[in-house]
Length: 66
Image (spheres, rainbow, N blue to C red):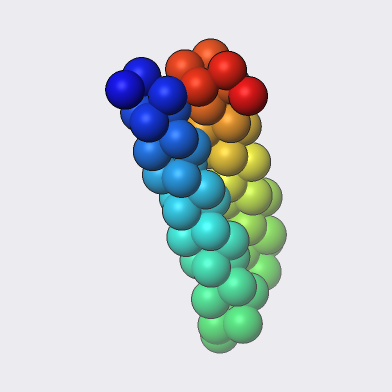
């Protein structure tokens, strides 16, 4: 049962990461009057995407054992 929780949390982390990356795509392709703010937001969203994926992967490793 705990392994299933690990896999579920891993997929939630992957989905959050994908949503952050999708937001980066919309942010970059959108029209912005502040390019410095756009770059800062893209960097923040990239870090958030990487952290959500790593946390999900770590929880899967701890709870499911692989």
